[in-house]
Length: 405
Ligand SMILES: Cc1ncc(COP(=O)(O)O)c(C=O)c1O
Figure (cartoon, protein in one colour):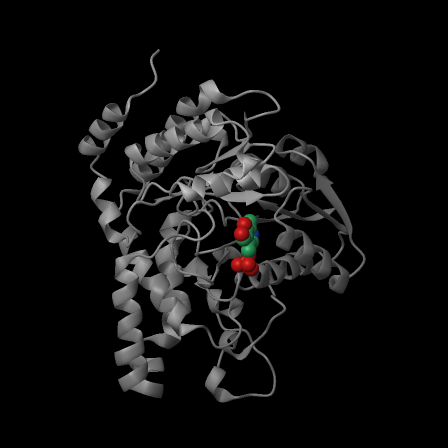
């Protein structure tokens, strides 16, 4: 089979009904941005939304905007907009705090739900913040032991009736390997354990069905594939069946049943609001709200399928360059096992990425030798993938990238 030519890719873009979505983004000219899995680019609707929040809501509305501009309800209103992207009901998601903070909330809430159990299962290669937070939350909550599995295949075998919580990241941030959410959630529940998923690299990138899989808790970032902006607040999902029983530890006044009662004792608000904590970042909500407008124009299944096609194309184009020990594919080749990211191994990954950046292709580096290329179907074209692969081939054929390239 002959490799696709640039003209073939241009023809695919021409025929692509999703191609106009790119116009929602303010992308620098001449740049191919393959880092939307770290920080998504600026969506044009976010500019308008932030300006309105600054000028009208803050500038003119002042304190009145907590009610008149709906600031008070933003954590729930934005949660309801993220819900369909993860397969949740609108009343099951709240937006606020960071993913790290939300992880702390759900880990402690989960451990409190299983007071007689003393084991937590997680993944040795989980994102470091998850590992740190799980360890610290467990230390505060009591005397727990950790089972850190090495691969997704080891998870089911690590779960037994001593396990209180299984806490995993759905798409591995290094390799883009996908954990089977339905199977693992079932294994956790069959053994009476609570499950919590970190969806930071999944939301807006792969199909998700947290309710269909009967997930207990989930958290995730909004500044990656959701393009909410640097530091945009994270989301927290809790299944509605748990709202009345789960007790999260960061009991701030925004999660109180009567915040303006200013009562000395805490009483959780009904529903998902009990997972909120303190005054949220309204300007960051505005940029996230603007970026979420784009998803109203998206047929999600089609978009996510396009993401996988773009990943497959990149792998196909780079295939002839793969040489064991020199330049290798780390992500699974099978798109059913992969997030929307292609990870490569290059012994001089840092210089290789610098050489790519000088030629207008932005990816990122993970120690020691990984090159991560995030593939965001909202704004990437088939020709972008062809051009990026061509640039990669050119750098590889020029020889050692460290030379000073
Ligand atoms: C899987 C995962 N969890 C959490 C985070 C970061 O969380 P926070 O928003 O608290 O910095 C990241 C950031 O890249 C991540 O990849």
